[in-house]
Image 1 (cartoon, rainbow, N blue to C red):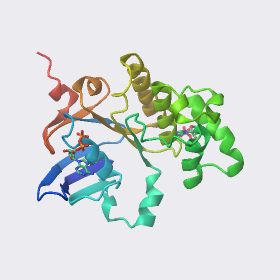
Image 2: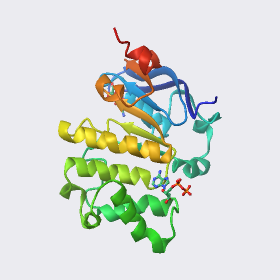
Image 3: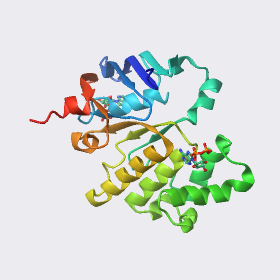
Length: 241
Ligand code: ADP
Ligand code: ADP
């Protein structure tokens, strides 16, 4: 069976302008993600997890390596070809102030990807926004709110709704619950699991804690200083004594 996503010897080195130092943020990692599974990518802060996610979505240019989607190297696609594909690949970032434009109403935040990728005709935009809000458990009245008028959990629901708007096949969940109160974390995780089952989504789930991925991932890769130091099924990673 061919993996949906195959990362091969991926590298990202950052040159520091002030010094001659080079940061090997991602230093030759390889892993496969199969359709319908959740691949957990874990490791301590700064080990290269987010950079890996951004490389897969071409939000950063790699130093070296390949990202195959159904066997095709998407890093070689020209911009136009990649833009078409982009609606299938989404990312849910950690809930932070930088992720949502503070001056955009929730309505516009959700409408933007719908228009960009022509998901529904214009006259259905309003209805589609209502549907997306409903899916993630937000009231219709949220449309007229700005990001800062939402609680942390609600903001994360909005971020998830925006990612789902283009009906993606693959979502990178980059620490989607780590900035939330513990009492809200399970709600958001349950929501992500629900959508995975409902829409046959494939997830790359990034977390700095093994606990978060333990229950939701099929396979896990453990990163340390830019490298994958351990990889295997949940059973192999979480050996019971
Ligand atoms: P993680 O997601 O595991 O916390 P990151 O991928 O964010 O780790 O970062 C990996 C390493 O790369 C860190 O040392 C970080 O400081 C560095 N890094 C990340 N982004 C940049 C950047 N734009 N410029 C320079 N260094 C960066
Ligand atoms: P279809 O492929 O016929 O649209 P699905 O079972 O895939 O049927 O989807 C059922 C409903 O959910 C449809 O209204 C579809 O537009 C919507 N839908 C499907 N996938 C997603 C997704 N990832 N995010 C949001 N809505 C979706």
